[in-house]
Picture 1 (cartoon, rainbow, N blue to C red):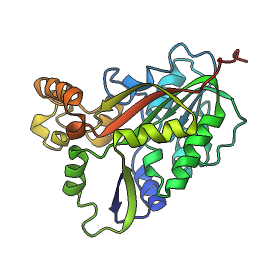
Picture 2: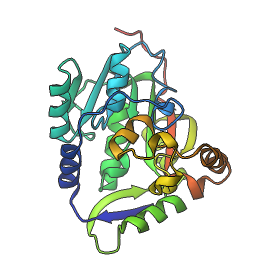
Picture 3: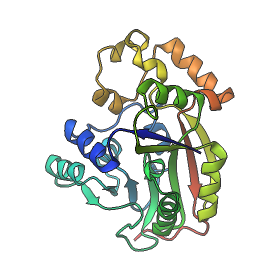
Length: 265
């Protein structure tokens, strides 16, 4: 695993970031990260869904609009306040992934994008994964993402200057086998895993973006998923399959907690 850095401490960075953007509209882009992967575990589940690290709410609001019983958790109080103000019917809680305020076995499904690799202490990463395991019902499923230690991410980190002069923790970058091992250590059975791409490196060149996103800001692109021109998108799909250590910037795992799933309450 590889650690990268930035100029601001994590609480300061995330408070500043989420204060600068409005609440997300419901997610779009069913064939793109993260909705593509979330839809592998949420549709058809007969209990509550937990989203760890819900941020401004693109997935939370998407599933809430569809009538899913979903609870969002984030450790940045400002974003929880924004979501509550936007829609008081959203169930959102300010909480730490290492100390979840829920009884054991409450949720049928957990979504976790952008959380585990953002915890600086590796012991905290293990605790957070164990907490996820605890709040899942036997037979419940987890869709979890880890930032990958790929050539793509090394280039992004260099492009953004992380690690040159910055000294504050930014994120961990994991090899696929490292993410797999941490989930198994917590007790999860891994059903499937994917090399995924969130924002491609080439997205920084506006001419190479899909025409619909040529003038998009980061906020609007987050909602629909980052898109390149069709031929570049096709090349990336092939590359992710055969060269994941080069192109992937995320590894996504679909896991199950052992046991028979309990009847929904």
